[in-house]
Amino acid sequence: MIVILLGLVLSAAGLSKLWSRFSLAGVSCQRLLSEQRVFPGEYIELRLRLVNRKLLPLPWIQMDDEIPLKLSSDIPLASGNKPGFGFLSKGAALLWYTGVSWKQRLNCNRRGYYPLGPITVTSGDIFGFYPRSMTMSLVDHVIVYPKVFPIAHLGIPSLYPIGETNAERRIFEDPTRVIGVRDYSPHDSRRRIHWKATARHQNLQVKVFEPTTALKVALFLAVDSFNARHSEVHSEEEFELGISAAASIANYLTERRSAAGLFVNSRLADSGQPVTLSPGSTAGQLVEILEALAKVTPLPSGAFEEFLQAERASLPWGTTLVFILCRASPSLTDLLVDLKESGHKLLVLQVGAADGSEVESGISWHHIREPGDFMKVVAGEAK
Image 1 (tube, helix red, strand yellow):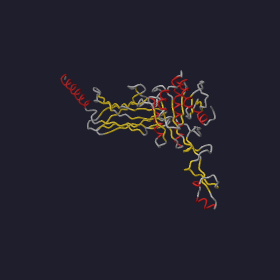
Image 2 (tube, one colour):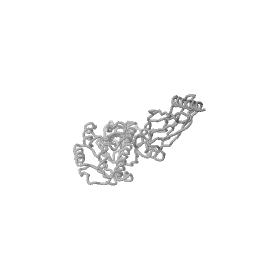
Image 3 (tube, rainbow, N blue to C red):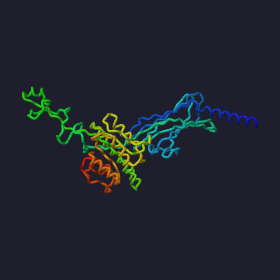
Image 4 (cartoon, rainbow, N blue to C red):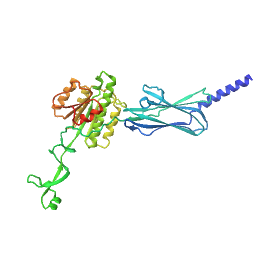
């Protein structure tokens, strides 16, 4: 009996080890996301699937997907291998040539650039004596754009007399936009005569053009100016408000077919490099700006003054500069004054309470204390 029992134990141990050795062979996993780019307040449906493509059944198998905690605040997770991450664990039993799927909802409430993965699959023998794990480098990325506030009117100064934006005063007219006709006067050019209207009215008629102004705006976000606050929680709120201000202005400009660019002295979450997007008005410019703002981190790539000086020479002539900052240092205020005196059009949006760093040299300087103040500030109702 002892020999028989010993033989059964050794046979079970050998069978278990052999079962464990082939348990993960032919096993495949997949992660599917309903969306990879969303705005705050939206959600993503995460689908995980495991398939056993062999004759050997699996009495148990576990799938661990490492996901950011900020996307799973209402999901119970085990501790992950990286700070700020946790394991989303799912388990099942699989027969031969069968699969199983799970669905999980991820709430995207905070702006950011979030990697998902890798995935670890663990299985083994029926007794659990010899578990075996396999890590699959399935990495996806979720981009949560910053909040975008609606803007009814934004008084950004421009140096270009002709372009896509309607001007408030009739100083320059765009010859490509005809809005009507009027009677001819001696000082009108013959090129402006509308011959069809003249024949219809039996009197010389000239074209009336729409007055417009071209906008070419470079948005500068000073990341290191937000790190000067002593309150860490309050500074994070101000930082997100500053990023939303940049996103809202970029959205406002692109809707009006104006050129918008973005420059941020931040170490991006994916590349660690600063943002340098030259002003443009193409269809994908807004998407690039929003994606760059989603990847912005509070870690500066260097002093903003040095960053501004380096990018200043590459800006096209006539570019309007919009600065978004939290606290202006004396060296930065001196640099702003120098830019103003050299002929640049400037607009400064200071996030947070006033600290006495405003300059009184013709620079338009506004304060944004909370999202509710944004519309009032950009519309020129408050300073």
